[in-house]
Length: 473
Image 1 (cartoon, helix red, strand yellow):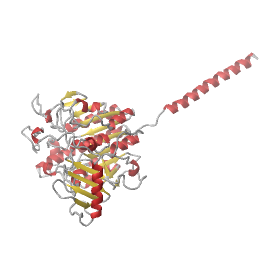
Image 2 (cartoon, helix red, strand yellow; image 1 turned 45 degrees about the horizontal axis):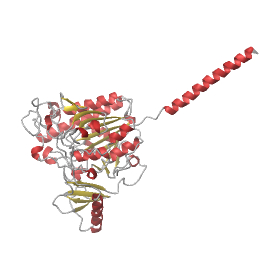
Image 3 (cartoon, rainbow, N blue to C red; image 1 turned 90 degrees about the vertical axis):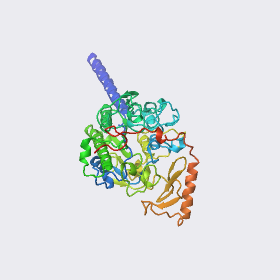
Image 4 (tube, rainbow, N blue to C red; image 1 turned 30 degrees about the vertical axis):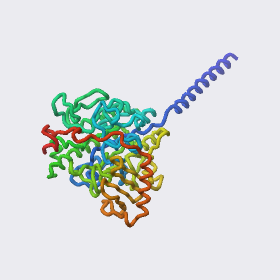
């Protein structure tokens, strides 16, 4: 009897232990959350629409960008929300037309200016992802205000390395104590830091290091190169690689683009090395079209350049890669816009922007996958100078008011170069698009600050420090 009692007790204990093990295993399975996607935004600065191989460029080598496009979805009608630097960034960070909150110009570099920057009332994609448990880091050009309240570390980013203002020399030249913007030290978080080497390479190395540090956590990396923005400066080694280009200005620009391309390759390579390619959504785009007359960049066959609401100012190279989740080597031909990027990221992460404000971007992932048909947007809008220039696109039609010129209506399906206005022949379409713009513009406010006048802008120097202009070939 005693043996039977002992045996029964032993079986009971073992059964209880087994139940604990099974229960613990089940609970552990419940506690394990599915891996969340990482996000990398790579933003070029003043890159021409036609200056990448996947858009037909022949004289500038961009093998890494071409590979990214081949592995991802190339958006043939990818737009930004503004034709120059800072406003595009304000829209990219918020998913909202920046005219809604008055960020329509470039802020001057002034740490004491409490107005010239992304309003603190705006919620950034980094804010939302941080609340969702992401590690957020920004590397490169900020250009969303120089006052402390506009700093990346106060806008949802947990780590920062880069230039707070709108530009910087690419080499560590200039006297110590230089106060002009293009020689102001970079910042690591909030601590000034000078760099050695070529700035594009320095930013690339910082981005790669961020990915390595946070390989095991969901992360968001915002890599905003200042290349190929002026000053046109490049290492001699890169200038030699594009030595076939006779125009010295375009040669310097091309060398900068090629160096940027190599940086993109290194970022993609570390994602592959760490097994993160299928866990990471990579977005690549430029902040606006190329400033053709300044850098001899090319936006062909598009009309216009940086600063213009014609296609050349707002249509940019635009690629989305998510291996295993998006069909590689495909194109998406409906219009998308940079405002869609933060909204897509937050949706993929399982979150949402606050409901107390209108968000203009949409989650384009179902469209890129072919799960949802039709255009993501009924219409897209642009406004500069508080309304001195504006444009609206709906379907194949685009209405443009460029400064003092008369309003023009273009059929982009047959006239991508915007050469012939059909406003008089298509009066009903003109009236409809003008009405759409007027209704949209009622929701906007006047610019909160003006762009700095030429005398206020930093004057970049060449590599040899002898004045503005391209580096010596």
